[in-house]
Amino acid sequence: MHNETRRRAGTTPNQRLKQMRRLLALKPLIRGIEVHSGLTGLIVEHTFVATGSKRKEFDFMWLSSLTDSTAKGKPDIELVDSTSRFNTLHDILEVTTKPVIYDGDTGGLAERFPYLVRTLERLGVSAVIIEDKRGLKQNSLFGTTVDQDLEEVPAFCAKIRAGKRSQVTRDFYIIARIESLIAGKGVSDALTRAQAYIAAGADGIMIHSRETNPDEVLAFCRRYAKLKRRVPLVAVPSTYNSITERELQKAGVQIVIYANHLLRSAYPVMVKVAEEILMHGRSAEASQKYCMPIQDVLTLIDHKKYGTP
Ligand code: SPV
Ligand code: MG
Image 1 (cartoon, helix red, strand yellow):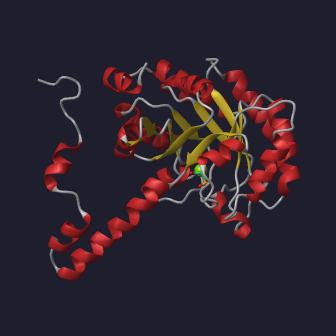
Image 2: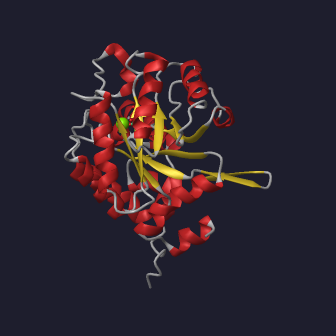
């Protein structure tokens, strides 16, 4: 179904869940961006650019633990519990039709991970990404400035297997996120882990890095390409952000995630507006410089969408 038609007709959890597998079969590379609210979901749903005869848009939404936590004023340490994360997810599912990849952090205890998988499938999420860390999870972009304790390979494989066993549909993806480069353990460790996680049933591998150049990710990709058993590769170019999607695709990456950009762009403007109002003792300057017209915010959300009389 054409995207515009689907948007108008709406979707069901089952249709939405399956859509990511379809997209991966159709396109050499799919791109997604973070969401942390209904409003950011709407941005991803509706934003496109036209270049010549081509229309470019985001293929999926990334429900980031960093931006979901930050939007709630909380640190990204698995503190925002599942109930709260599912509330955010519900807000987004309500107003969008595109597939969702859920940031599952460490996936929690192996005994609990199957419950997360079942809930996400029931809601129509297409994939969960879990990272191979243990203990207090801290955001990867801190790198080794904080403790980044990697999970033992057999234990993480057991978690992947538990998730795969619990899955109801054939279409849901459990993607294993490798933190070797984040923890300073190098490309060889990452590759050993990739092989083990694929053997355990992972449907995708995410390789993460916080270097400002893509060299170590590309080195991983070159060695990954030689593996006999491969699954789709995910990259998150937050710090090595000069690399293009085309270059990542050439290196073998099939899924690209822009993990935090809507929140990172909104926050500085909100602070500026607050400062300008304080500075001037009125809102005229802030409104003129930074705010959308009142009329536009009133009509931003189309309340006649469902055919309300
Ligand atoms: C997130 O967006 O929450 C991620 C990616 O897990 S990162 O912040 O780079 O760890
Ligand atoms: Mg995260």
